Image (cartoon, rainbow, N blue to C red; front, top):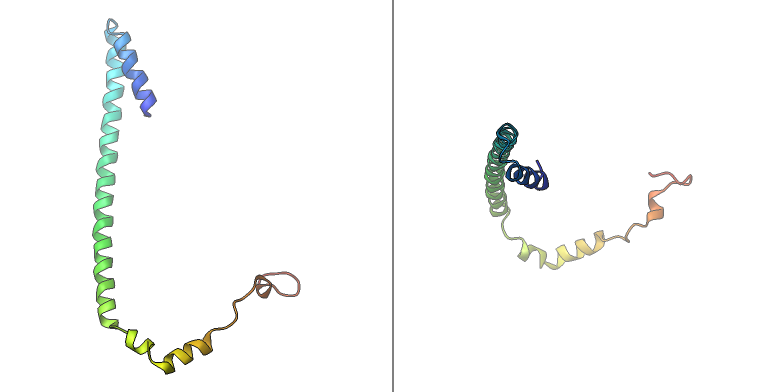
Length: 106
């Protein structure tokens, strides 16, 4: 139920307090919608908890991997490594390089 539907139902209840049958039906509709909303909140809370737990686990694994790899900044400062990196740098590809002579993607 949208907020507007909920508000309209509440206003309808207030306007029809003398009609007990109609008020009872509307209150029952509100009760059912409230129950559905609580179920949705519980489901989303559980999903959030699960995702947070998985995220923390991934962070821990990433930290362990980074610690295993160590610090490569001194290696990158090595002139030989810089020369090799510069040798591997090629011209950037152009869009035309991705098409064959018929204009189809490679």
